[in-house]
Image 1 (spheres, rainbow, N blue to C red):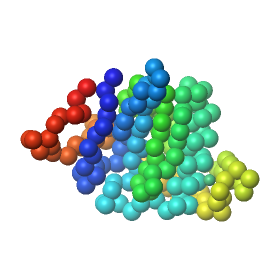
Image 2 (spheres, rainbow, N blue to C red; image 1 turned 60 degrees about the horizontal axis):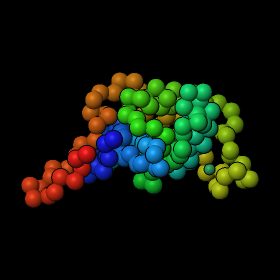
Image 3 (cartoon, rainbow, N blue to C red; image 1 turned 90 degrees about the vertical axis):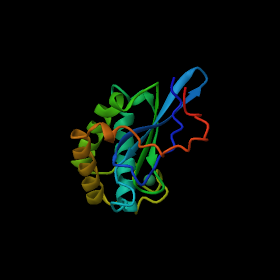
Length: 170
Ligand SMILES: [Zn+2]
């Protein structure tokens, strides 16, 4: 197993779908993906209403997916509002999860109707939801994924100083 403790350079980072870490939980590997929807410092971050609506729509979709639903441990927004974290059971790469993420954001981009869990009983601040913004952000990310290149799946690492120990080698 590769332990990905990447030293990511966010100034060189593009939007994409990245493995940010892998953790051993008992004898099982758990993979954390960064769904980086906005390019840091080059694009506006998502509005809170958009990212919040996407959190509800995408989490509900992924947890109900017949192939992946029971492997989804967590899906939630990055505090910087440039994307989402997706935590999945298994030792996985971006290519493994790409079809699910494409399906999810395709679904979210065309979503109509009641946002799942958007009631005061189920959510801490359900008035902050922007469905139109969510659909626009989902569509942008879907379009990026379907035309993604290698660089959208591999994090750019900071240049290491020669004296620095190479601790990221498995
Ligand atoms: Zn909520």
